[in-house]
Image 1 (cartoon, each protein chain N blue to C red):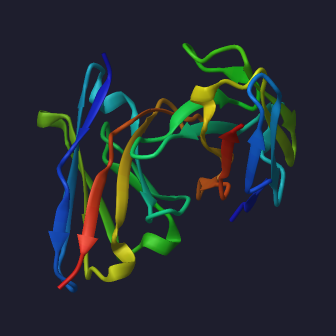
Image 2 (image 1 turned 120 degrees about the vertical axis):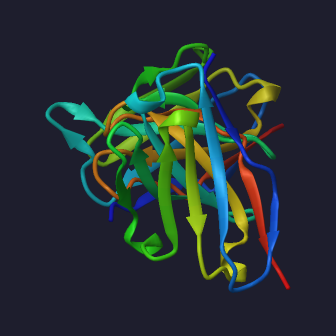
Length: 111
Length: 119
């Protein structure tokens, strides 16, 4: 199984500043030139919400302050400028091979 | 609009089985994969498996083989997950989610069904 390691486990960012979350895969999630890495936001009592798909594509309706980058085994989610409503837990997820796996999550607090 | 409506919370005794439903609307049920994901209280997300209602093919995470059984009813556009031989380790929120193609992403999610296993 592909293990996804997210860091940090939690972070506190001041309003208007940048939040950077890392996701490292135990093996490449690339295939045929595409990266099969997705990012989700989850708030308490809600299901996860898709933010970024295929490493860097912004899902429709998601604010442009969210961005994703990376390939192979190293991926990053950036949020800039951070807003109050971005307080949540963020998960990376790979869909390159079964079983699909998720990172352990990163809890973002807004200062 | 696309919706995945899940069944309500369940309280079941250890050793029993339970079936959770996920009713799809707003799209062609047979053309998309339905996945199931487990989330224990305060924990991360765990993929259980998928079903493709078009041909009822299924795939399971090895960890959930023998625990979860995925089915689908095309006539009612509803996917089901049965969990058997329940223990406290099965207490969790279970989500269904839609995927367009294999290797894609989960673009729509159900609201989640809370399962509590307790005597």
